[in-house]
Image (cartoon, rainbow, N blue to C red; front, side, top):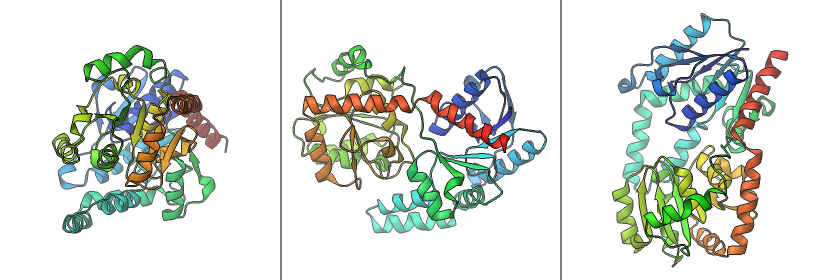
Length: 381
């Protein structure tokens, strides 16, 4: 097959971007002719056997880069005779459109409802209404879901599929759920024996400490505030905080709650698998996530997960069997209850085994293979 993969950036930074790089390499390995159409290429991410088409994607400071790239990509596609055109949403065309970022309106509603200051909330609403970036995001997302602009829609979770049907009235049979996959060689329970002691020693944690892990970029949207509030009521638990966010702000919050001495603010790290290995439980009360990879990586690493219904990855969790699902991110009472329950070593071990076993059904290779089967089904028709 001659396959075009289209996204604004080709790099290993960012969930969708990493997915595209991995998919492109997989398709080449399977013997297909792969063309990447993009507006920005990270040279270190390039791979042999892939043809790269660099097209204009300027105008970010003006808020028109999405529009420029969408039109440039469409023109480039017309120059070639591709068997399959795979886009990664908000371009308005593609044989297969993978929705990795969820529905924009749902994200906005969740984000704005999480803002506590009414003046700030009004300001943000006003800014979005005036934003060209927001206008083009809405426009091209709506174009994606118009009949005739796609052959199949691929949603990264059942939650995202339900949102698409609700907002855009897309027929259910047009949407296939394909959860993100995990590299189970990199993320697995055996890492605990290799890395746990190293990381715990590094951050002044003992072998017997009950350690929670929060990992993500954007502490506010991922619900770190709620984890800190829960920590206040869990007494002996300690918390590793890994990722990019406003560390000073959340350190102040931890101090205000009198839990700073039990927190370890690590910042971004390269070898995240070592931090999963050092933890006992993964706590991630996200306000909105289409399908948070960190949830799946934690499960593959053998960690029981506490997350929310607003994280699409919760669709992989069997509630109260290999993790816990909160009805809302600020349900502190339930979060505390679940954290305290998982202090029990036998229960935690049972959850851990079931979590890692579940993720054997959701490997990266399996995810890519399912996408390839979707391509084949389209060509047969």
